[in-house]
Length: 490
Ligand SMILES: *Cc1c(COP(=O)(O)O)cnc(C)c1O
Image (cartoon, rainbow, N blue to C red):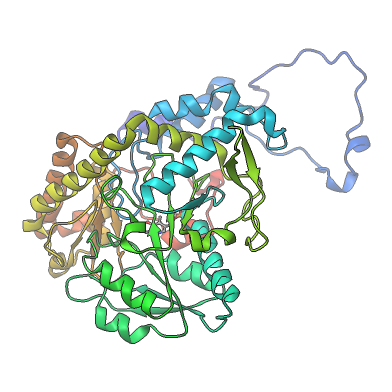
């Protein structure tokens, strides 16, 4: 880090000088209320909080410096596999901040929010058309929430049919961690089946796993290895033949939009991550949106309300059937995110969305081909929107994939996902998305190649990385579970 940057990052407590203030208020010209009249004394501080005494400009510089330590898709390439981190078009922000969308209240009368209802209705229709489903709920706030919602509908469906013994959800070993987690939250037991040597569902293992206790198979296609499950029609037949349903984890639909539809592949339930495929921001863990689409046989179980178009052309909330699993979120979903996603879909249009998928797949295959000579490739075949490499060839130098990821930080890149999927040793999982230029892709590829070369000549360089970031290696588990957020961490 350069000297000037260091200076900029001096901690605000170090700048504190008694008596300095960042604001001044006019003299109070109304009678002052005793604080204890408003708040019971037990809740009041006994002495003032120890805040730094600084000028306004110091505060601004402090927070601006902190914000610059953040990495986001607006300041660098973010090739995060299985978590589509695509550019968030600013047009989406413009529409979401229109007064008619931003300033409405969930308790307003339907007649006064017809535009918002129409947008939600159209989004339901567009998502149904894109996925090949019959009905859609926009309520779930995230992908995992969508999974749970879909599984609760599957559970209600089997129970309604008197099949209470269907308690098992089958997932492949490459599945996203949220799949088994959602299955247990919805009261199911998870059965994991191994992938075959090609990285696809092993049909024999699937046949052995299905039975009268199968509630559903959860699958993503292309799967998390970025590979298309070519035998999807047979897979659907096996699961349906055993009386189970097919759940499609569509968190990352960037490879198939406008090209293939889960509904046509035989899936009964689909969730989409609007904060991935539809370009809405991931935010700091939210707000997101994980709408769920279902085939007609599951429609009675949808969370209520959805939005309906009435015969007179107006829009209204549909309170749903008595079999509805109920509401899964306060109000109607993360509405601002729905506006952004609708903007994205409409600004591209059907042909544009197809072009997005084609470009995403092309970018991934270009990177895969250029990187193949430098990494082990467990599945050296055409991929979809993402692909996996293995850094196991670097173990001979004492270097792990984690070290490669940390070294990438020194070059200003967000590292790709590592150690997932679990069935690939020393895994690196890369998803470039469609919006990156060839120059950006080449820059990242050249950097990865340079790092592989460093690993053989100077492994210490990787083991000590990052060298230029504002913090060294963190304990990743503790950093998420017990973050130290005060200034004393230095
Ligand atoms: C991101 C992701 C999820 C979970 O979505 P969240 O919005 O993070 O809950 C589920 N499945 C796959 C394949 C994903 O990539």
